[in-house]
Image 1 (cartoon, one colour):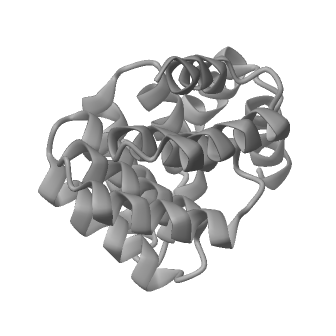
Image 2 (cartoon, rainbow, N blue to C red):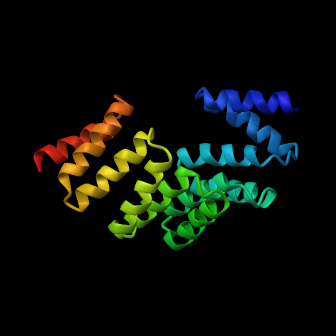
Length: 183
């Protein structure tokens, strides 16, 4: 059983989403109660736009393991995308409480505050995410977007160039750089 679970995780990490999904669904149908399976399958469904099912599976991962910071963080993303920003904030804060060093939870909280047009808090939490994980191109790019909205173009340029340095194929960062240079 553990070997099959590791195979599903391997397929998922290699981008073979269709096969990984088959494994995850099979495990769930068999009654396996590994919260990582629910979390990973929920993440796939979130990426595919099936937000309701992604939310259900992620909540199941939390029910199985109430101390699963990553599940709360993922749930915050799903809830943000569903427009449930207050509940998304609660979930992100729960992830941070469970793991104060979990950079993705701070990044999610920054995104939630950005969605609420609370740019100052968005900047604070995104910078905290970068402090915890300075190698996240996504975090640098998110900070760039916030800084553009704050009209801090010099800082935004530094941030977007860092995102491009970390991921030279990050098209969104190049788009943001164009906005900055035009401004």
